[in-house]
Length: 101
Image (cartoon, rainbow, N blue to C red; front, side, top):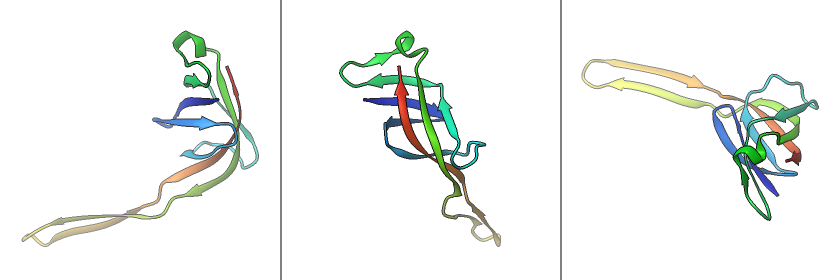
């Protein structure tokens, strides 16, 4: 059985036992989180729409972290303009415990 959930502006296909990285969620490591935006549930038969209105996916926060640095370099030739910035995106690692629906 798998589910497609939406969180942080993205969609993820998850099964029980999966470990995924999602946009940062304000939760401590070891606490439980619930994803209410379930788009579809698959398995023997696909369920969408009203069939998954009450469905939810629960998981446990494994850790909070930051991804590797991405270097953003802006440059305009012949004018001497250049600018270097870095960015590290925050994420939350979640282990999927159960899918109800």
